[in-house]
Length: 269
Image (tube, rainbow, N blue to C red; front, side, top):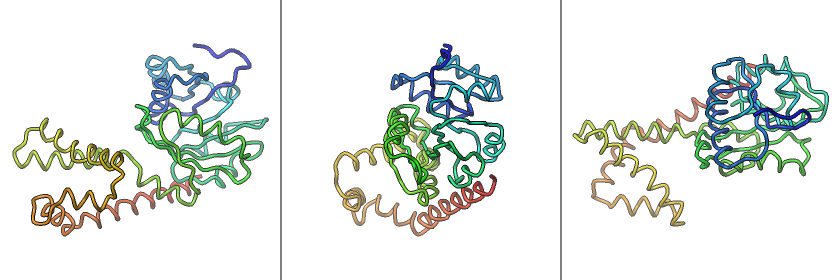
């Protein structure tokens, strides 16, 4: 599908995993605007075109020229090199997905007439159940925020938060927590004698259905914990042993390690 001359599209610079997830979610939502993806890797572009019917563009400057909304979707260590190659001569909204890279650093590389925003979307947006944090430059026109919000609302829920909270949000909301917990719990259950299929089914129920219950019931989390872990019961014994073994401390250390990585990313540009 080719984009007609003069038509403004949503343009992704970078054809990696998060672009693939967002495009999948946008297609599921029947997003009506043209989508263009640029990447230096032609095989990535061929795959995206085959799967989702997007327009692909190997030439960076032609891709940017078509942008009505420009999404920077490359790794943090590639942002600086990419921005140095871009030339924008008219007002344009640019949204960075680079974890840890603050707006002031982005503006140093590509300033006026760009309107900068940052977004942190979950890969679960692939199925329309994502969660995206947004933050905008102070000079970003309030009446134009809806364009950015509308894009990410196509694939899930959106939260606008202060940029100072972005790193903490990033390390907390990742779907990796769920996948990691699922794999770890299922593997432990296998060691107790469950086969892989039953172990995964039980672990998935413990994690996903309990969270769904909390969301749907509107009951306080502490009450649900008390309900599920009766004093003297197996669940209570399991939870107590996990806490005694450093479960809470491990989570705290993991999040802090993620924030440290984000802070290193800020120094890459």
